[in-house]
Amino acid sequence: MEIHRALSQISEIHAHVSRGEVYRGFRSVPVGLSGLLALAAAGLQLRIFPADPLAWFIAYWTGVAALGATVAGAGIVHSYLFRYSERERRTTRRVVGQLLPALFAGVLCTGVFHARQLPVEFLPGLWAILFGLGIFAARPYLPHRIGWVGLYYVIAGVWLLAAPASPAAVVWGMGLVFGVGQLAGAMVLYWNLERENNGGKKPQR
Image (cartoon, rainbow, N blue to C red; front, side, top):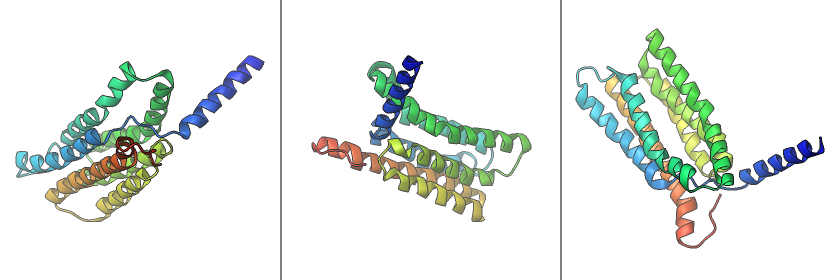
């Protein structure tokens, strides 16, 4: 019993220490590239489907999201497999675990929209709100200013849900909200982590 109690206390100490550290796995350049990808994807969608911009909307943006996640997360996967210590891997699992519920909820809601053939005009707003909530969930491990990016996603998502829009406006709303959001996230990561490291200063939370 004493051994189990000691191990439990050690795990709690590790968790407390991890929450006090800033996770450095996310980098500004890959996150920024995922934002540029969202902007480019919106313009490309209007060219591919000029008559009906919302045709294949779910399949198209699911593919864009998968590509964006690959761009933003490839470095994390590589570091996790080949560079990180066991403690850094544990922190990575915690951060990703904080994000997963919101992302999983987005996948489930998307599946319902597809199965019930619900209006896809509401998906960009729903996706933005869930993504913002995911950012808030991971905020204890990230620079505190990332909370403003999460708030931006939530507010932008509510605006997308409330504002009537043409099909083209829905596409651009999707691209702009996520494009600007990812670029803002990249700026936070650079300003609060990478810039300080390059200048020899302590990273800001």
